[in-house]
Length: 225
Image 1 (spheres, helix red, strand yellow):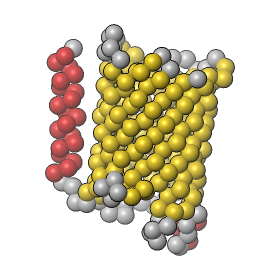
Image 2 (image 1 turned 180 degrees about the vertical axis):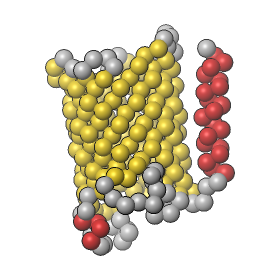
Image 3 (image 1 turned 135 degrees about the horizontal axis):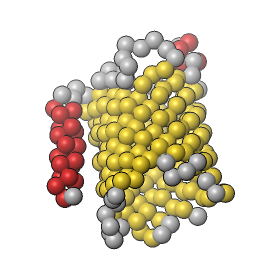
Image 4 (image 1 turned 90 degrees about the vertical axis):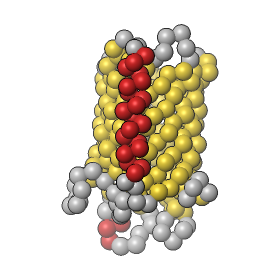
């Protein structure tokens, strides 16, 4: 088991290193988040989250958002979710404008021993209020595909995980099938039964409007009530 974990960590580090070697434009940011969930009925829960994301070597705020939604679990393997996010986002004139995002998720999970494998397809639609040209008036749609592996360490409050996510533009002509990639390695620390903290390192490559890489440290506090 220890050898398997070491191999996964080595592979993950190799992927990060490979991307950073070929990077053209680099940046660093920190994401600060708080999320909360509340069970409404069997299988149905409400979720709300807020986050502040920085960029330009963590010296400026890129966006801040508030998101809320519902998650329905059919069984321990399959669930669906929908949510709405309002974002205050910095634009090309260095001022902040609202953006609206809608999400629809289909999620699956498969526990195998101490490991948990999960996948998510997310349909995302974004509406801008900062209009520079006619294209900005058209909602921007993406399909997002994420795979995640978590190792649940027995009798220990810290669980490590890795994930990879691809952003694919939809309903428009695009030069690329994938215009953003996100690779994550993190730990989930259970403070108490209903309280936990996630600390992540994220490597993000954005291909639009030009190739840019960003290293991100994400810290999120989660509470269930």
